[in-house]
Image 1 (cartoon, protein in one colour):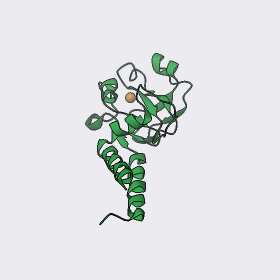
Image 2: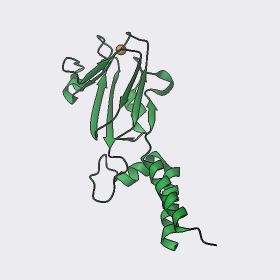
Image 3: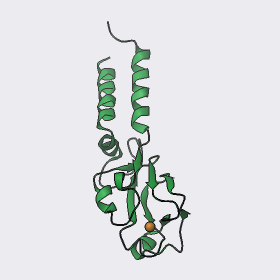
Image 4: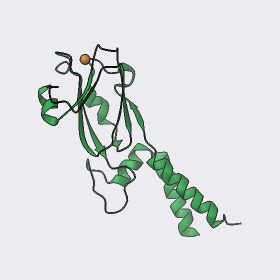
Length: 162
Ligand SMILES: [Cu+2]
């Protein structure tokens, strides 16, 4: 017996919702937000999408999470910051696509490696949307959650057969 149309629609909606679900990244993984960590290496195998969250873990007041412009990132200057926090557990939700830059504002720490640049892609974007980072949005979504991508593909195939 074929599944009911309602069941198929429910499956498809659930799959799409799963793909759009945000990812939470612990910056630096076990290292946290600290000097001596290569954050370029940490980002190199990750894809960030609008809606995802960065969590910076560090000792309160020992560091800052300061969002800066590209020039601030390049020169380790936190003067014209877009946001700043030194609570020890800074959560940043990535709300816009493009490049986002974070540095530590404590003297010497940015030069010591505490600088993070992330390229944020559009989440769950459909046909005709812009691409970023050399991946189509669909490819980016599949890259982040291959299992979820497979679920969507399965649902689409099921619908095509229906
Ligand atoms: Cu620091």
